[in-house]
Amino acid sequence: MANVIEADHLGKHYRGTWALRECTLAIPAGHVAALVGPNGAGKTTLLNLAVGLAEPSAGAVTVLGGRTAGSRAALDGIAFVAQDTPVYQNLSAKDLLHLTRNLNRHFDLGYARGRLGELGIPLKRKAGKLSGGQQAQLALTLALGRRPRLLVLDEPLANLDPVARHDFMATVMAAVAADGVSVLLSSHVLAELERVADYLILLSQGQVQLAGKAGDLLASHRMAGLEELALAYLRKTLEVAR
Amino acid sequence: MSALTMSARLGNDTDLRPVPWRRMAWVTWRQHRFALAGVAGLLGVLAAYLVFTGLPMHHAFAAVAACRPASSLACGNAIGDFDNAHWSTAEAIAVLLQVVPALIGAFAAAPILARELETGTFRYAWTQGIGRTRWTLAKLVPLAVTAAAAAGAFSVLFYWYFKPFVDQGLQTRLPPLAPLVFDLHGVAFAAWTLAACSIGALAGMLIRRVVPAIAATMAAWAGLALAAGLFLRQHYLTPLVAHNPNLPGSAWIISSWYTGRNGKPLSQAAVSQFLQGYHPAAQQVGPNSVQTNLDPVGYITQHGYKFWVTYQPGSRFWPFQWIEGGYLLGLSVLLIAATIWLVRHRAA
Image 1 (cartoon, each protein chain N blue to C red):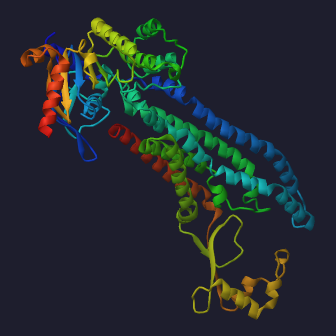
Image 2 (cartoon, rainbow over the protein chains, first blue to last red; image 1 turned 120 degrees about the vertical axis):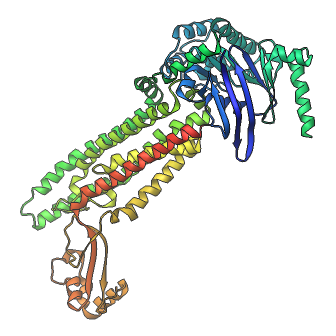
Image 3 (cartoon, rainbow over the protein chains, first blue to last red; image 1 turned 180 degrees about the horizontal axis):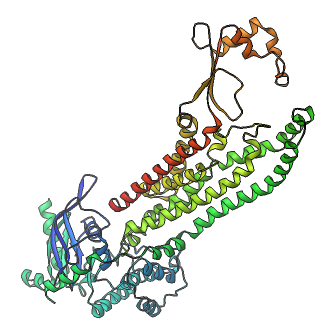
């Protein structure tokens, strides 16, 4: 399988400080990959680089088997839901479906309408009048309606209550089961990704500390769970920093 | 699927056809119809006002223009009455219209990118399959061109409205190059609207917040408009020089002065003193007795002094319109290009 994301000595600096440096990694297709690390570790920077919102200061990043990040070919196959799931507050769910359909070559309107129906989100209601959980589901539906090969989610669960978190991940996992879409999602709380993630990238202080399939990592480190493993690594990097 | 066939499949559609432009037309209309309606409403209300006040004014002016003999006292009074009745309104409208391009640029154009960046929706919009270059072009260009076209149509109406006051030969109020009206006529009004929209787009992208972007657009536009009106426009073509004070009313006078016998310019005080000392009667020359032969300029030149005036003749109206329209169009293209560059390279 090709790699959905390949970074080669990738770096990004903002105003003199490196948000991400010397990042080399390859995430194979067909995984639900969790990008984990403390706040300020460079997770959002890496995701912005992967979806083309930011340009590398050093190195290179390609997606979907060698496409330049941010190119039209890359954007055609990637759907991105940013942190706080921004959607136009003054547009109705129906308008947002049409908007997304018009901004892409393909959009599965039937799927998206059906999904919003199941979620009980009224098509006529403005996005700004929906609850936080409903807005997140709406943004996710807009992304999945594009039938992407790679779904990128930046801190999708950060502002959701426990029920909404569960429902959101259920939608993601249903798409994985149905379409085989690859997923890359970031979080600073690993506990809630433990059950779904089968690939882990641990980022700390702008550098990749650990990357690999969850099963392999647990076996080689003799750990029972991803959270335990991540914590051990984060403690280690903190000690090194001191 | 092996890595080879997967990358072959991915490689095949890397030159995929882009999302067609017409799809963006719906997006632009759906998201900016209120801004467009605002532009249409503003220009529509102003146009209605021009028509309702302009029709009776033109009616009155036709009567004044038909007065014969034109040099009679009665006709002179009729012109004076017309002026008293209509000039102040027309002048106020011309002053008010000066800011219309800035309002359009600030309130219709500046929020387009600033709102996306302020609310974070650019992270949605600029990661869709259409790509952000197309998205930005398909928003900025139609909106700016539509606003400019509406302004252009409006300036035709203004030309009709203001005609009695611009170089009619009969009663000349203003030369057509006068700062008050030049940029409301011809292609200039549309060009200034286009420039204001481009300034707004770039300000929105640079500042990334709606209200400061609106303020910055107004400030930048005002600076440019003042620079053009006060300093640049008079130099588009080299001004003509004359020594005759009786220039045609269509001439836009830039400066005038006297030089003494030694060829050096005289101060205003020196000229007044000269007039006082050598010809006391000149002081009694009031505005109503210009027809008498107490011409101070003629008197002063007889005594070896020289009168100078630099001016732009009215025949340069269209060359000046094309010069101003041309560089504003060039500036607009540059600003939009800079905005697109920033969108491509400084998104996050």
